Image (cartoon, rainbow, N blue to C red; front, side):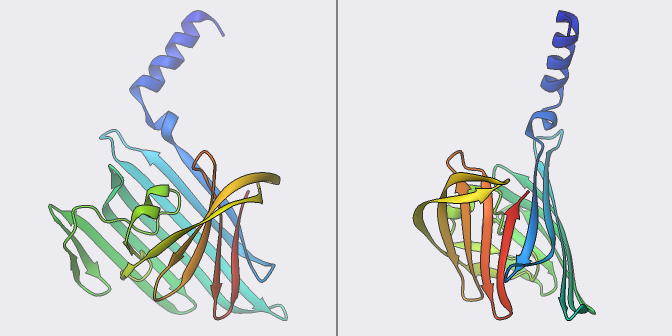
Length: 209
């Protein structure tokens, strides 16, 4: 690369921070050790300094090669300064569809669906596992249901886990709500590496590709 090409490339990065800030997390998802689908998170910077996140999960649970549960969830979120500004989400569980939408309006986050709700907070966070700052919250918004849940979060110490096919050291945390319990693992650099949740149907595991 010539000096001129290097300077031109560097200039493009200065003009478009999104090139430097774009991130994605691609997970294989299993239930009790059996593959059921994928969940992808793509985070991009916008020109106005906000962050746009797209989350998409596709699961297909089978029994004796027969599909017994299909799940498709897509959420589009807009963030600024670690606060949720806008949410549009749709979840399809077999034949049941749920749509959730909301926007930040000054000191109030207004949810229009499925049940209208006004959250008297200037900074609301969803279960944004990709952002370790959720570990400092006492309440989190579920983008699938529109519920604003109490969250008890505890640090469980350091462990060695497999991520991207390698053994890495990670910090483990537990999020406990009155609806579900989730365990999360973050690398020592703060990168989200893994997720685990026990449901009435089985244990769900996210393995980072």
